[in-house]
Image (cartoon, rainbow, N blue to C red; front, side, top):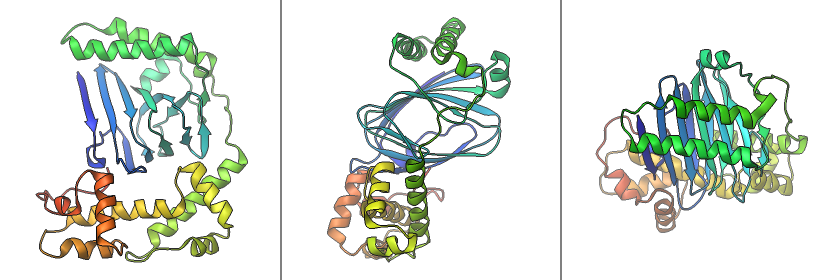
Amino acid sequence: MFLSEKIRSVEDLPDYTDVQHEALALSPQGPKLNWRMAQHKDYSLYSEEYFSRMRFQEVQYGDTIFLGLVLPNGEPVRFQGTLYEDPFLVFWQGQKPTEYDYVAEAGTQIYMLEVSWPQVEKRGWATFETPIRITRSSRLNAFVQRIEMCLYHKQTTEGAEDAWMLNGVLEKLENLAGEFLYCAEPQMTAEKASHSQWKTVVAAEEYFSENPAGTKLTVQELCRELGVSRRTLFLAFEKQLGVGPSKFQSIVQLHRLRSLLLESTYEKGVVSKLIGEAGFSHLGRTSVAYRQFFGETPIETASRPKNGSATGVS
């Protein structure tokens, strides 16, 4: 089976087995990525190619494992509070509820192998909690090329036997990861400074979510609540999310506005009313920013047919 999709809306993000996620677009272009998937028996291959900055907060559970190769391009990928400018392997574990928090920049590519836990044990792979940094090499290129061959093969050939091609993917992965894939020794830990910045951002987000709709915290108020300096606050947000605290709060408000619009019944005056409830004070500027992020006006969102299950995040 082969599936592919050009993602242009947060609501259209694909679902993964045993994964719950929330996503925010952090750039004016909104969410833009290409997604492909090829499935063979107990294995699935996924490819994600990003054209805009995206923030994901995930909880994974169950007995499904995702082993991913992340390829940053220019700007670093911010994963669990640490910036990765080089490619890295990550083991998304599903043996217990595990939370992940990361930001993928435009140009980032992610290749993932989804496999059941019994298959992981059968091949003798070990889990690792901290991503493994990978240098660009012929082994890395061979692994990526093999995945691309498998995806192309699934796309163009129906019903053909492709076990040989999947085995090639697994062999290239084991060749790339080497001993790290077979030993559970702890890998590189996050730097203390980065972890502190990450905690600052998480704490600020809690204040944003608790803040009543219709009000907006100033930078001074946020600094006072968190007990940090203005410089520390801005540095934390720039390093961990790539945007300042005020900009991020506006993005959160835009997504809050979208949720309100999707839940509402359209009638005269409802859009301006909900824009105020989401914490915005200027109708025109808000409408322009909203269209940049979501590719449609607030009125178009509110006028959508309601199915009773739409939300602002996946």
